[in-house]
Amino acid sequence: MFQRSIFKSLQRASFACKRDLRWQKSLNQRSPSVLFFYSSDSGNTKSNASAGSKKPSASAGSKKPSASSDSKKPSTSSDNKKNVGRDDLAAENMFKGSPRFTQVFPKVTFSLRRDPRAEAAAAKRSMNIQPMLTPKNIRKMGGRALILVIYFTTVGYIIYQVFTYLYLVYTWPVAEELKGFKARNLMYLATYYDVLESQPDKALPFYERAKKLFLTKGADPKSLAIMHLELNIDRCRYELGQLEGIEERLTDMLERLQNMADQPQERYADDKVAHHREWLSSDMLIQKLVKVLGPTYFDQGNMDKAIEIYTIGLQAVKALKLSVAESFDTKDIIDYTTYDHMNLKEASLTYQLGEAFYAKHDYKTARTLFQATINYCRGHKSHITTAPRLLPDLRSFVDGWICLDSAAMVYLARMLIDEGDSSGSLSWIVAGRKLTSTDQHYNNKLCIRCESGFKTQLGRIAELQGDYQRALVRYREAYDYLYLNFMDKLEDKEADVARLEAMRGQVIDN
Image 1 (spheres, rainbow, N blue to C red):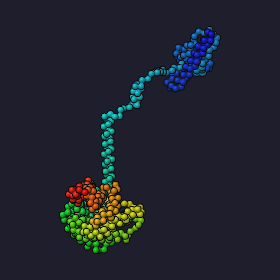
Image 2 (cartoon, rainbow, N blue to C red):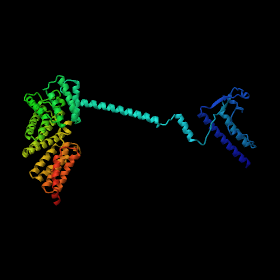
Image 3 (cartoon, rainbow, N blue to C red):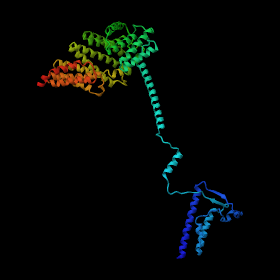
Image 4 (cartoon, helix red, strand yellow):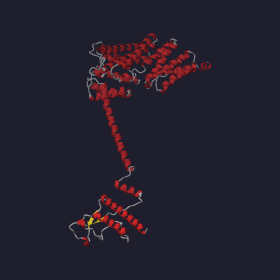
């Protein structure tokens, strides 16, 4: 039993020695800092013919495996001596066939417990990490962001201005006979505020300055280009309510344009890209003049003169359409939009002429004109769906046609109510309110007045039926709809509300 226990202990020591040898070998392969130094022991410097035939002697500087200490333990058994001999041979075989060197291993330290703070600090020092959200970095990033915002804003504004200028030059060209770089740019600036921004108060001073510069450059005061500029000035004054002298100036201009219209004209000209070389004509200026002079007589109550002016405008537009039809190309986009633009001018003048006949109580003629206006609008809608590759013209398709047919329906319903046919007027009211109830029409002034007009007609129907309470509600709705949308000319709505409120006692009795 004693011998068996000794054998087991020696066997365990042998296994431990082999394990340490394997660990040392793997450490030599992994660490580049393992060095071999020549031994300084003079007793072990004997050279042989064959270095591998000699066993290395145990010198003071040599290191042996940790199991060698176990092998020095006294043993009395022959089996134990054999085991010790095997272990010594295994240790000596590591250096077999090599010169006598002493193996020196690097110092390896092991730590079972690691400090995470120390490791984080060491990693931070090695990577040179600095905190990002410091006051200095925040100011730096804010400054850079501000510089980028200013840069892109400036570049975007410059790009917008350049493209706007090119659009004005391409779409609303100035007549070639008007000279002067500054004056022409003033014209483009005035057109920008007048057409694109709808701000006549800002466009008027630029028009006036451009006119002075053109005249100083030698422009003919009686030319179509100067008359067109004067017409734009008077139109802006009319929209601003500055009516002094407009009637006389426009009447004199109309006579001169009519004399020019009697003379033969080479071709049709409108403010279009395709006709920029001959972009002015007397017929075109006449129909533009009528849009200002006709409403001037209408507001004064002079319906006979308004009808005369509107009739002259319709004749000029028909002459324009005739010249367009002569060179009309069904496959050309510009021709399609130009023809539609002429139809819009004719439909607008037809509607205004119908208003003048309604004001004269000529319901038969007015009804015919309003029906023709509705037919123009229907033709425009079918024209959009059938025109090949149609590109909408902003001046025609945005605000021109919207609610023009429903405005005519308001007058048709009003005439039927005046004639006592309240049931027949309901069909026009229902059809018209369908057109004014879409979201895209809410910002249009004509649509706002149409919706208010339909509410007023419903109040009139209720008043004819004796339901004064409902009539008062409808009249108030019509007034509030205009008032809340910042519309003017509320006198008629106020009069309807006041008249029904004066009948409050009768309303309560009913």
